[in-house]
Length: 479
Image (cartoon, rainbow, N blue to C red; front, side, top):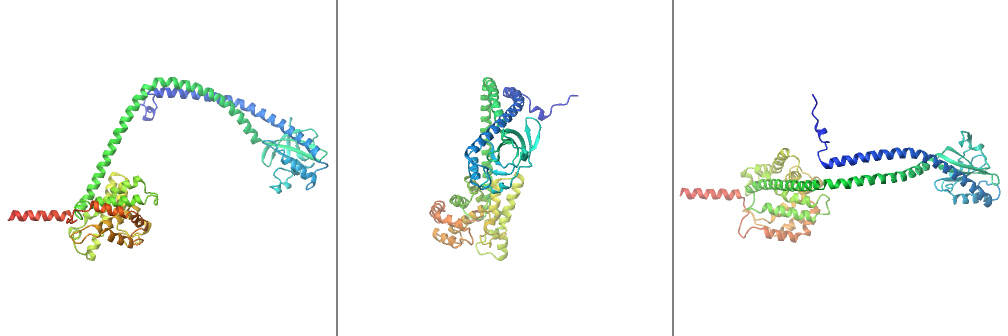
């Protein structure tokens, strides 16, 4: 029985005109490329041989020309540290061939002059007397110290810089050997350059064929492309709509969860809105001071801040709604709400997967009661151990608590709350966040006034109000 094609095999099927044309162009490109490579391989061998011949001829010519110049400009034998040597070194430094090195040796092969001698005096100790040279043409091998040719000869040898082509001639008047070295690496580079030039022309020809193929094929797929583009646009729009809808549902559920906790605890409706707004204002004022604060990060913070007290749903009403001071045991139980809230969000994250908003919400819920000096709860974190989002929400929450009216306390003025926050700079709060608050204190005051409850309205737990209304209704029914 013939096996069915695997998914991987089916994925390469030519199911569209575009794929068929692409395959045709690719096949042409492969054929042209292989032809170019084969031609270049054969051509480079000839080019490399020709380049070596030219370089050997050039090395011999350069050696002979410098020997003649040396005979005209230098009187007598060249010996180290003599006027004749200084003049020879000067001439050699200004007569270097392109891509090679011109140097002078004494009759026995020791180095006399080198273009880098001034920068590297250690070159004076170099001696090529025993350096073996392969003379060309032919296969003769001789030591450089034995050679004193009156007419230029050429050869190859392994010198300090590696394998090189050399031209050598002996000048009896100055008793020096003029040697020109051309490293094989430079020759290979020149051969590659010439080969690349040939390859370029062949590539241009091949590219012309491919361009003609592509242009002709484009007429066949234009209509297909336009249909595909429109379909993709519709799919993308639908995907964006669904993602936006999913995010709106998620954000609404999260804010509703926060509202549920707020219903048992604080106000008539704007406590969470104020916390979110204050946190956004602080984060915006801190942009540039913290690299993680971006526009997207601030948008996450605006919603995540609303979750700071969701753990209070797990605190007993007798403690949560108590108007007076807590006993030590009651305070210990109350201080469990960050752990309850964080655990709630962790459980959600385990079911829905990793999510930036949930991650930030966990940080805020768990750490917004920590203090910069390490005296907060639940873990006594300090300084940078406290996540930045939690440090921002901590100040926003404190400001709102101070400036909000409760059944058991009057609301402080903006200036009174400001003084308390400034006194806690560097102890309860991160000094940088307090400084940001101070820069925008007028904006805080304006937002506080805009979202404050109506005159005479207590910010009391909605649960208390609901219970009182139920009791009143029960009383009226009994009467």
